[in-house]
Amino acid sequence: MAFALIFIPLLMALAAFLIGSARWRPLLLPLTGVVHLGLTLLVLVRPDLRVSAAWLVLDPAGCLVLLLLSLLFCVVSFYIVGYLRYRQERSNRIFCMCILAFLGTLSLVIWSNHLGLMWVGIEATALCTAPLIYFNRTPRSIEATWKYMLIGSVGIALALLGSFFLAYASLHSGMAPSLVYSELLTAAPQLSKPWLHAAFVLMLVGYGTKMGLAPMHTWKPDAYGEAPAAVGALLAGGVTSCAFLCILRIYHLCVAAGEGAYASRLLVFMGLLSMLVAGILMVGQLDFKRLLAYSSVEHMGILVLGLGIGGGAVYGSLLHLFCNGLTKGVLFMAAGNIHRAYNSTTTDTVRGALRRVPISGGLMLAGLLAITGSPPFGPFISEFTILCAAFDQAHFWAGGLFLLFLFIVFIGMGATILLMVQGKAPVDAPRTAYRDGMLTVLPSLLLLAAVLLLGLTIPEFLNSRLLAAAHFLEATP
Image (cartoon, rainbow, N blue to C red):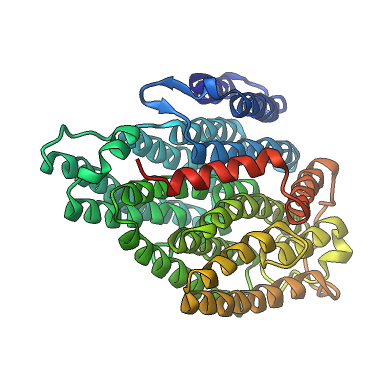
């Protein structure tokens, strides 16, 4: 089944390149998304389909990320069809090809049972993403693309070096060197501790760069600000989630080796630092797409903070991974609609969005409440779970700072988004032909409904997989 989930999007990418009709080409995206989601659900209910080869095994944490990626891509793909109808001045051949290949390479990352193959998948994803960021072909978009590639390349090089260190950790202990995840878990207690520590630091920094943890986040504001909104949604909910999965795996190896405390201290520090940096940069931010980039930095911090706290916070972190990915989809697609309605992304021009594009303005406002952890949305449950676990395990300083930084973020995001959705548009604000349509607002409404559902009740189908993944990551051989 792994081969189908990886190669169907890649074959569709080839088909998108070969199809001559710019009108029909985008329809390959929702077709692929629906097939990919259907196969993903089949894999989740059939455990016997989760092993396709020695190097392609779907672990419990991978099940969660695969479900999130497939669901998010499926919903966003319908939005992209509507979006490209408004962008007929641009050829969509490379865009459709790259976004389909993007799904295939991320699926490879999720299925990889070999850390070297996982690294190849992450690097291939970066190559697929670069043309998507450059879609608008402006000087700022080419600058954003180069920042993404250069900073990401440094990070991925460090992750590769960390992978080598991890292989040497087994060689140094007299064992055969290996990067097979399941083999490393079994041999974890015998791994050389100094080399394991060095590997963890390098892989945390390397894959943390792909996540956008501070201070390695500097590519995010430009890339998210210049990329089309749908690309921003898939970056914030897809690439970052897969990069977090890479960190989950090296963390699991540290826990299995008896070095969980060492890893946890670094994760708590990086998590709080990311939240602090993001909160400071949000205050006074006038560009709402860059604001969403800093929000992503904050939520990546929450993910690694929960992982570092451990215990019940691991469950909260995994739930937050799901809630954040879906909520970011709502926010980026709504932001893209508002951008097209005003031809601007700054609050100097964008005012009164609730009047000009009422559905998108309402989605932006609801997304603000959700992403800042307000009830009754899913992120409130996940963040509250992490907070309770922090105090239960005597992480009082971490819990207190967590609350403080959430408050700063709420003020920073609220000030900008309330400014853009309320009041009246300035008299000199440009007017465009865009108005909310079914394909550009229905996907956001569906994701918002899912985020609301997760705040009211967690379906057993998802809850059982969250519990299985949390137990898997905290378990030792």
